[in-house]
Image (cartoon, rainbow, N blue to C red):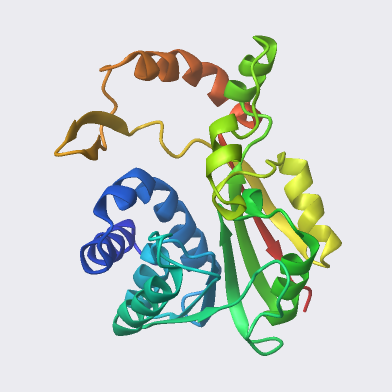
Length: 271
């Protein structure tokens, strides 16, 4: 079993080497949950990170001894020059031991052999898919080795916040500004409940073996921006109305986990 210290060290080294520190600081608790789940399933082997974002998780896994792959349409965040950015991103991650390939996750065959991956990560991607959810899940099932696992994380459509917003007559869908000004791959097209994510995996021939709701950012506090950058503390501080609301909601979230903000489902390919 990989220690929490080793996981944290690998992730923070990845943040240093890959950069995008601001995004890392916002997502690090979710990253730790994913890496912990990977290391709990297999100590080595081939891991594919789909829609790998900034590459922090894939880089950390490479540092922990895994054969790390990434697959994305246009990885990186410079949407003004996607092709150049993708090439730069691929080269930067190659230095870190991560092999990045490119395709449209929703329509293209994944550029990997059948039964070639021990773990596939689909983290915060499902909610962005607008053309197909069946195709990528069936491709995941194809490239997984028998007995391999897919780890899926996504926002919880049935979260307490969403339920309260609906009760107040507010929308829980993507904002109108996002619909007008963001390309489809950047906005949330649909969010899912825990049962729905399990069903999505099952329809692809995968067997859910673990399903849970969690709130990965409860113990993190956003501090005043510094030099135009978001700053976070790993301690819980009552420094804003949002923090007070989080504290008041915690007993309810502890008693009813299905109200938490995020979902994680691990599903296994039959042997």
